Image (cartoon, rainbow, N blue to C red; front, side, top):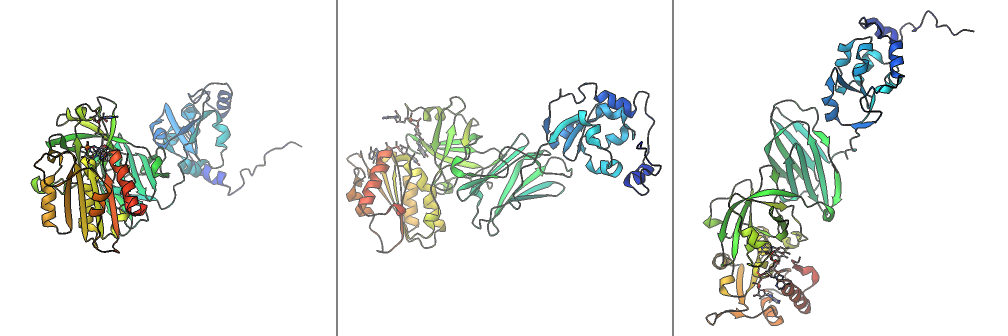
Length: 489
Ligand code: FAD
Ligand code: NAD
């Protein structure tokens, strides 16, 4: 028996009947019937312009194909180049163009839900929409006003602070790395619209969230934040996270001793970075591919002599000794104000939590090994509630080599908890202070505790032999490993 369609097809009340009733058809040109289309699709002609290659299409890419002669439409995650089909479409070109460069699934469902588009448009298939990585719900969120876009990162760490996040915005992409315990959480997106270079970052400590507020260049409403880029929304062990560099400008350079200078660099407006206490960064010169580590200092020992620091903390200070036959420092010293160096993300294993319950702090520094002590000292004197005593033993060759001697002496005078002692290894005959190298005798005298049971912590930094010998001597004096932090390479 012949399978003749019944008169009642489509069935009364079916989707097809209802929709087709409301749908306007346009007259097609000659040679543009359904049969002509089928013939064309079977002709082997390259209808997508991609020579049969299937591609992953991002939303940004899809949006670019929005013209009649280059029209891509996404239906249920599959992207079709419908330009060759335009003239064959019974609903007309205009109707197809309503979905040009976008997701046309809803429009398609309103009008053609029954149509087997997969087979009709098989030869027009460009590829799939790129799959967004599954967003671990709750890691971040965003909202907007007419002029601002705010991204909120939920860290679940109540003590999260501004030095736990590094944000860089460059060429339309935003990269925000948040250090959460021993992991780096990365938010990395190609933003869907342009924003201004400057942005603000705020840590809401009691809630454990970080807010990055971007300023829109145009006050359009954003439909999405952007496209995920490499490693977006992922956690990487902190030690494996990339050391990224951003260009910083030399703002000032001042002599501190005959060979040590205070360098001040300014971070670009498009970066937020604060080096945590006890950590260092790498500086890289553009002229030579040399990279060396340096520990930024805070301004607390010299700020009374300086202009107020920028409130947004865009300046980073370094005390750097220039070695005339060194590889890096003579080149660094040749920089002019306004020149650039590249500055890496911070690195280091110092844990600030070691200081929080502290009663007595001992600092052993030799030469520029003083640099990590500056922030540690400032933090201890400002934020450690039970702190009773801080002693700095500062080893140098000569009096001339002592960094910030008068500032340290003034601080000792002002703050009764702080004491400093200078030990010279090559003093002149006029020196009536302590002399020699680090030794068990010097250390045992230095380490006399105020109270037998006080909780103590000790930091040591200088030339490698100094630090290594010092740590050995401290162990011999029964200072436990837990009570010592050695700053080493
Ligand atoms: P180099 O070329 O390394 O030489 C330095 C000097 O040592 C020169 O006089 C050279 O002739 C001599 N020398 C080199 N090798 C030898 C050798 N085998 N035997 C004998 N002599 C030798 N420095 C600071 O000034 N400030 C800081 O804040 C600071 N922070 C640091 C943080 C960390 C974590 C580390 C590991 C080091 C830090 N340093 C700091 C030191 C800094 O990284 C460089 O090592 C220093 O600036 C010297 O670099 P340079 O390339 O100029 O000299
Ligand atoms: P320096 O040559 O001027 O020496 C300063 C003092 O260190 C000397 O007076 C002496 O008491 C002691 N010292 C030097 N060599 C010694 C040795 N072989 N044994 C025992 N004691 C010794 O020092 P500098 O040129 O200012 O060098 C500072 C060192 O500190 C550099 O090696 C630098 O890499 C290191 N540093 C390390 C860090 C870090 O975080 N790891 C930070 C800053 C500086």
